Amino acid sequence: MANHPAYDPTDPRYFDITDLRAEVERVFGLCADCRMCVKYCGSFPKLFDAIDDYCVEGKYADVNTKNLKKADVDKVVDLCFQCKLCYIKCPYTPGDHDWAIDFPRLMTRAKAQGVRKNGVALVDKLLGNPDLVGKVGTLTAPLANWGNENPLNRQLMESAIGIHKDKKLPPFASQTFAAQFAKNKQQPVGEPAARVAFFSTCYVNYNQPEIGNDTLEVMARNNVDVALAYESCCGMPLLHNGDMDGAIAAARRNVDYLLGFVDDGRTVIATNPTCSQMLRVEYPRLLGTDAAKKVAAATMDPMEFLAKLAAAGKLNRDFKTGAGAISYHIPCHLRAQNVGYKTRDVLALLPDTKIKVVEECSGHDGTWAMKKENFAMSMKYGGRAFKEMAEGDPKVTCSDCPLAAIQIDQANGKRPLNPMQIMAMSYRGEAIV
Image (cartoon, rainbow, N blue to C red; front, side):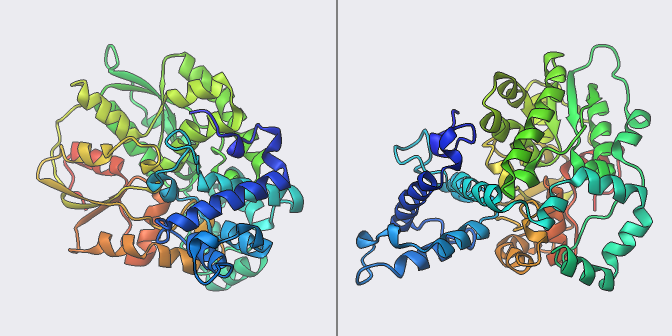
């Protein structure tokens, strides 16, 4: 879908302060008349409270958004963590309605103008470069992991960098997934069922390569030829924190890199739904190029890819163990891609397996929950997800998003499995716990 001019970073008006203010007043006024999204995050309650302060005798029709203070607008922007749920539920989005509201992208635009004016904050510079952090972390994994668990060091990190001292952080692997790829990849037998380029993501590469290795095993069980196609982070932390120049550079770098795999006839699969959202949805908007659109059209979530194999009668159904009752958290950024419930559908093929889908936001949302000013709110906004995931004390919990899994683990004391881990365990005949 083409960009709406108000949200198009390639449009000359994108960084025009006056034009942004006019769009803020327009959208805020329309949202105040609707108020359907009040439960999703802190942005909407703050917005509605600020607007109500200027209502005449409480009559919403008389609200004048021109009176909104810049400080109120800035707070609304800061409270948005880009879960996309308001966009998913909004009936007035571009292409669906003349009002053409895209609240998350309006917030991104406002953040981008703030960064263009004030520069990138220190914590965002650090969190915006997960490849640098990951390389250092894996080279010094024992020390880095000790530091992430040490209360005194975490207090220093909070004071110096701005990462909350109590936020559970992912441990670093002692060897990257890229370093393990060659020995764990299996060549297909004869003509492969499909050919994929595996954008393993920075998280899998540096923090949890076992998800990547299980993905390789699942693909091998289905005679899928896999090429490693990870070179650098998708740029999501840059985009969400308003570093538009950095996000565009990351998009251009990855499109240039991935285009060769796509031209070679491979489907790009990306482990983290936020990363597949970037490749599939954000890159064409950030760049507006045919190359970006081509890469986007070839990108899929891994479980979506397996569902496609199943629909074509090509999925290996030699599952040996079931999972019983699974509480499955479907990530917001997977819902935003509008691909349906593919993880649920594929896991349901396992023997003796029933899946309960939890559609609430975990509150992690990229790097937002890591910051000292946001962590407590992130746990509050993830409360409904935590509660539903724990109901019935399920033996197995699951989420496609490894960061959401960390957030759920923080609240409930149990780390949800990635669906690829569940699939690999079933193929191997292991107990799924």
